Length: 126
Image (cartoon, rainbow, N blue to C red; front, side, top):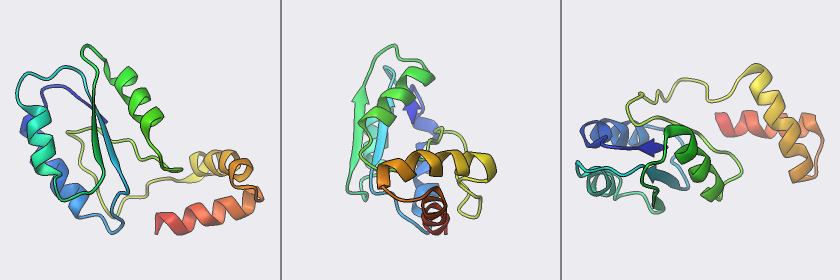
């Protein structure tokens, strides 16, 4: 996620992350040059999570920050969120054509069939 002067929404974001049935292995955030204490508040709000990384990228727009965070992520599956958008634990993360496209890409990486990759992704989503 990319943030810039988002300190006012980080408690809600942290509560939404805590409410997930599957906890994140890592949280990668790009800060675009906050001046309102966002980075400090982010670290406090997410301090219970083991792997929280904040990348400083002053002047980064949402797309550039998001791309940098994705590039820095170590997981095979990445959930991209915005700091002010609620994360519903009952909402599907992936569905339909998006899931099939991701499964096709991961099948090659995982060395399995597209069908098997699709099934593995469905299991991860539960």
